[in-house]
Image (cartoon, rainbow, N blue to C red; front, side):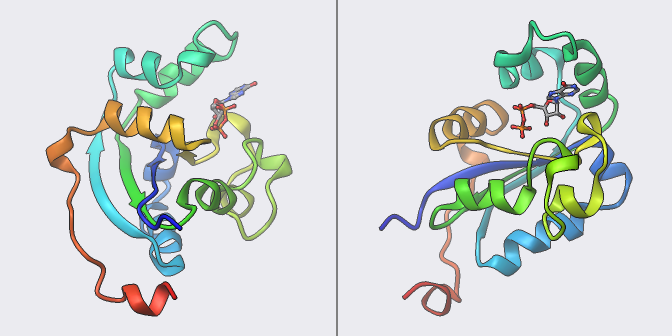
Length: 152
Ligand code: IDP
């Protein structure tokens, strides 16, 4: 079983402006995941076009682009067992109308275009997104002191 799977989690400008950073990060910390990268960025159009490559031709893309460039995004990388799948579960469904209470979006969002945070949807997209948002040297290699209390 691999405990070093990684995912990319970003607090979007709406989440940053609403003061939800610590709440969102604490959910991953409390679950037992290890933070290996963190920084604030105002993403460029070029970065977002790559990040959201599958959506660039969609009608909602220009509005989403404007929103994502409207202020800082908190970009983070988390590591741990099944973190990609669990990260999506912690986030909740893309459309907050379908997000269960207890999830980030289910607790803090009502609108699809203001759904507070992003999380990679597969191990492959996590790798792609981490490489897009972070340089190798920005990811920190260290051992979590609680490791044996989190993993059997
Ligand atoms: P995800 O963020 O859960 O991975 P995606 O389907 O990849 O969901 O969509 C990316 C983001 O684009 C969503 O989080 C949402 O903010 C926005 N989005 C997706 N579909 C729509 C739409 O129909 N209208 C407005 N925004 C949308």
